[in-house]
Image (cartoon, rainbow, N blue to C red; front, side, top):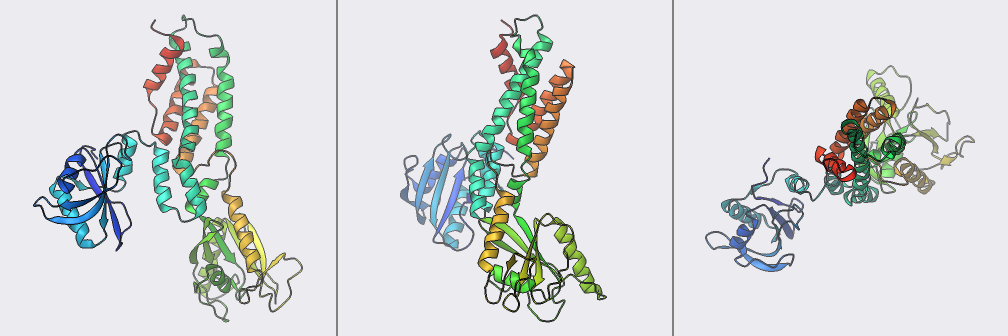
Length: 432
């Protein structure tokens, strides 16, 4: 992918709308804009302009914004055309942009250019995608925190410390006769131990950031006719599952996506747990148990009228509730009861589910990791720092620190040996 082309794409949602926003970026942007509207507006000032084709035909009356680089999202000359949302208008403007030498943007190309031009690091670029995909309030907050650079600042701080440690180590190896500070060798072990502890604490977050980004999974379990399908319909506030007095109606796993206290949750309705000779129902029970093992929470139902639960086997967490409390009293060993038909206890159940969702995704302190890619790289950083701490060989310690820098650079997209050289010359005056 090259960045010498001028690109364009619709930046607003797809489908019919009152306004469609067309984004343009690249070296030919200023000339294209002059050709379209004849009189380019002042930078970062919205102005109403008639857009014209190369033949001079009026295409639309649009609000135009001009963002000269490098003070733009991509770091390049950029523009936005706020067009009327009709398909014919959009098609005509696209044709004019193609005729002017621009090309359609590839997926993610605007943000990729922002990264390549130093406007965003990789963490912030990924946060842009997370913000666009955010379904709930908690996801929005997490993406904004990451996009604002809080997580990147933490990793850049660790990078600077690794660079300093590697510079000191390289100086100790290559320039033993220089007047190096005596604390350079003495403090290295302590610095490595502190850094290793900080990274380990950051990794020990119970994957709450990844859970929030991807969503939790709550599975409803219980014997046939315990009210699983009725409950999922009540929680979803729509007809998701077929409700029938006949046992074994639900055979496969049904899924519905919910916002539970600001956290995205996939709620599963599963086959009733019982021994059966029906091969189809037996397969449904097997699939249900497999989903329970991977769920973040199993909501295990007990029929208040006949409280004999069918245990959902091992699971990360289990919330046991009684159903049909409009027909029978709450069993003595169950703390929470609901009636999905009458609504009794549903507010309390929803509050309890929100509490569990917050507990599984909330984290105090620095922002949590949000992607498996980040976690894998930081695990490697921790391993390399730990290895550097444990070796007595200066050369091996230096290699471990170089590999740690390379690993953390994969998260932010920024680190190079030039950083190490700058630190060496600045701190130790080598080459004087």
